[in-house]
Image (tube, rainbow, N blue to C red):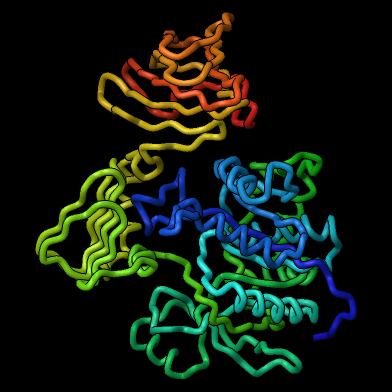
Length: 482
């Protein structure tokens, strides 16, 4: 490797995708793991953004996510950095795993800052407790990236974990605290994991990386040329004047899906690893999440209201309802109001199978909560019966729902707070608290908040079908018209 005399800008690249199926029923496709609130009231996405800002030294933070998560992520960032922040987004129309996502981010940075721009790739759903140690590891990784290395981070293992892949460290790299990568290894069985930890040669594969945009694209062209070419075509076919940048569906769908580990890191001969002991966790299961909470004398960890009788070593999370447990041990009990999970603590990784079955049944509990966030605000399902569906809508100031109609349902709106602007057919009017209106089936309509405070209204749907796919959009300021 060669040492560069020029220090390049370090740009954090946040990858925010995936549904976190092991943390169902709190993490669901429409509101996945990065947006889960932890015990301190802050989400993983917010923590990652704070962490990125701390190492960016005034540089922008690039986020690769989907259109479904863009508006919610943007709002989180505005809460942290203000509405006038200039942190760019790349929006994926479909998920194609980490290699294509990182490659598009590399094209973006190479185009704007040159191929020497350094990328610090951070998943949005990881937790890091020791920020000073993390920043020290990032500085070491950036120095190696300047020398042409593709750098990954290996976490010092605190126990023989079978849920993570491992990295075996090779020879030390001169004038650095890093090592060459001797091997990437898959998730081991318990006996192998014990041997890895005892050897002192292995660390957990964190899924975080640091390299220059040019070095990564060169490695991708060498080791995964099909992905490199598909991403190049996709980048050149984008309308790069738009904000946020949207990746074309037809071009991106043609790109092979693969992880950065399989596509590049396990094949390249210029990989380096920086060790880390900064309190890292990918919060990959309810067992891992429960360890963030303090336990009582019986080993129970509780969020919400619970009554326990002769119960030990359980994690209990409730939403609004009381959870009572009698004579049970080693359980995870999670109540979100519309779903209850009961699982053996040692089987917490298998919760994803529940989501798989719900998906096969096309049950909306795999995707939506009772409260669903939308670009314009949110709605909460109060009743979902065969003959009606009742929601409470909250529309934020200045926001507008799409001009739409429904083929199989009518709607009744009653405003309970704020003033709404309503369009039904060709008629527009204001709706004030305690005033109602009716939208017949197959009638174009729109709801808008022209004021400075949230509009709250109750929506009662009647008909023979109430699915979210019964929406025909004609106009939409959020780009959701197909």
